[in-house]
Amino acid sequence: MPLIPEQKTTGKVLRHSVRGQVLDALRAALVDGELAPGEIYSGPALGERFGVSATPVREAMQQLALEGAVECMPNRGFRVLSRTPGELAELAEVRALLEVPVMLRLARAVPTDTWEALRPAAAATAAAAAAGDLPGYAEADRAFHGEVLALAGNAQLVRVAAELHRRSQWPLPGAPRVRRADLVADAAEHSALLEALIAGDLSAVETLVREHFAGSAA
Image (cartoon, rainbow, N blue to C red; front, top):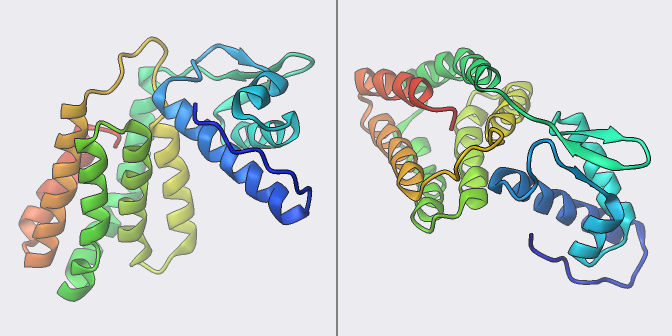
């Protein structure tokens, strides 16, 4: 896990900043498998590992509990929840039910120059994939999907879809680390989809969108 530089000030803004950094680091550790499903982690131990007090760690862990990633174990810490293949399949199905119709509707309504503006988001997924950066790819992947869905003008849709997406990225117990080649292939699907959207090829868009969700939960 990355360490967070020690900060001496105790102001409210700084406290929120540290908590946010810890939360980001814990989320990355979950995706990367550093926080293993079924294992219990204490606030003080993680705080020592991050170079911060236990308080922002506990606050970040409480947020992860709300997100369904961990559960509180009184007087022990937080246990990382285990997933099953069935649960991941259900998440993929729900995401597809939400996102596929929206993407197809947007493909018919959004102008080319708007799609062009999403090239940096697609490029970010490709760069993270090429580097084999799994946490970085997870973040870039959510950002790409979020930017697409934001074009629908429905903030609740974006929020719910992002939460489902994040949950789908937590690994299964004992699962091997995602291969760089798989990340590269998934990123290529984003690029292909964006090119089809820019070209206004609705048939290709529908095929790519449905295959993307059928093939993975990314």
